[in-house]
Length: 218
Image (cartoon, rainbow, N blue to C red; front, side, top):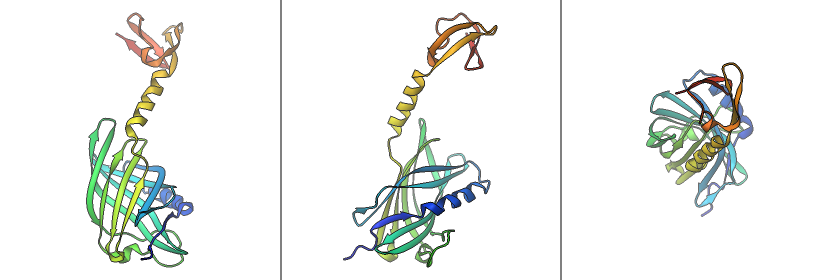
């Protein structure tokens, strides 16, 4: 049987305009994450492609995500799927990041960019979806399984990489090696090029200037 879909194509050149419009709506705690996205259908994966996912957190412990203008290349023809939105996703705090998982039935919305043809997603009606991943202030990773029942296809989407632990460790290690100078309130330098995490070690109790800020040594 001929594979229906072979490659993923996010309309990258036009998605940026959508993202700017989404950010300008004033949604509470809105953030965009840019990373590599790969789709797998019938065991065949697309090349990595940079795209954006918009994340809103309308209230603590809950997030909404938007993957705009999702398109698939079927041979020489383009399948314009639409904009995928998943709302009310519960977040579970786990140290410096949160995890999430959700099983929902969604309806894919039309995209908001000019196309030659029509958006397929709205014609599919209710679409079962499974989603799981991790999120922090700087990083977003998710897997999305979209059941295209009408087409007899499951689209497996991966956005980002699940390397949170190593990323956090690298960030912390970088902070450990950052250096600074320490001054008294009178402007006398008492330490030079000292690691920030040990800036006040060995000093007497008092108030010092570190990175232009007053710091109390108790």
